[in-house]
Image 1 (cartoon, rainbow, N blue to C red):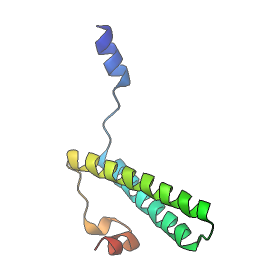
Image 2: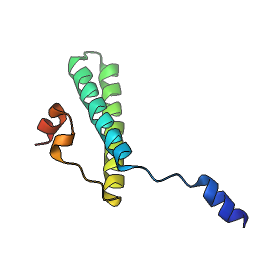
Image 3: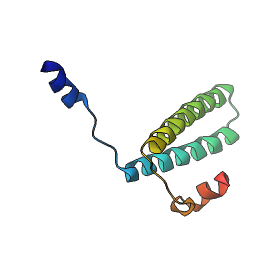
Image 4: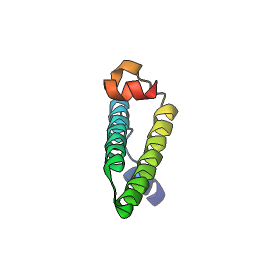
Length: 89
């Protein structure tokens, strides 16, 4: 009985498709921002920090895509901002 209660408490609510798409869009925007910062940096430590941040964001992006695919979430190409849609073509 206690195990069932614990599972019910710890169970996360189902994520809405719009929330997943919004999270994916946010990560894409963050990746663009870090890429811009990376191209303007000249300090080695800051370049390294940008690289680590990009890798973390890419991992999050892959995770979100996996979740969206497992839930059957789809989006038309035109549901994303123009600059993100152009880069993915």
